[in-house]
Image (cartoon, rainbow, N blue to C red; front, side, top):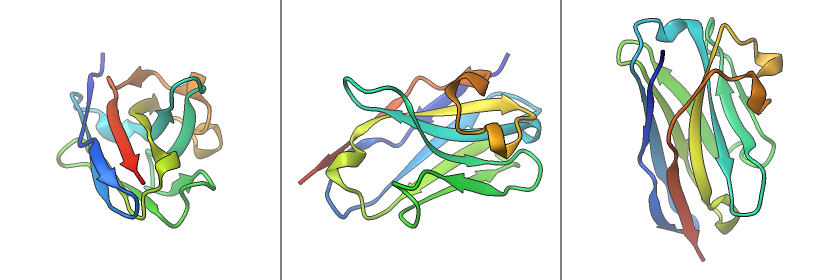
Length: 126
C-alpha cells in the first residue's frame, strides 16, 4: 500500500507561480511512474504531466507545456510540480498519482494508476 500526500496549493494571481509537492510513503518509490492530474468543477479529471519510473523522462499535456515542470527527488520519495505563468484556466484540484512500472505511453490515462493523493486546490485569480 502506498500513501500519497499532496500539498502546496493555494490562491495566486494570474502570471504567478506555485510549487506542488507529493510525499510518498513507500520504500519502492523508484519503481513507480508518477504523475499530476487536475479536475475542475464539472469536468473530468485530466492529465497534466508524468515522469518515468526508470529514466525520469517526462511528458506534458499541451496546455501546460513550457509553463509547468514535473520532477522527483528519489532520496526524499517526493514528487514536485513547478507551475509558472499560471492562468485562470489552471484553476482545479490537483492530484498526484503513482503507477507501478507504468510506461510513458500509458501515463495519460487515469485508469492506469494504482494510487492517488487526496488533492490540493489551486486557484488562479485574474
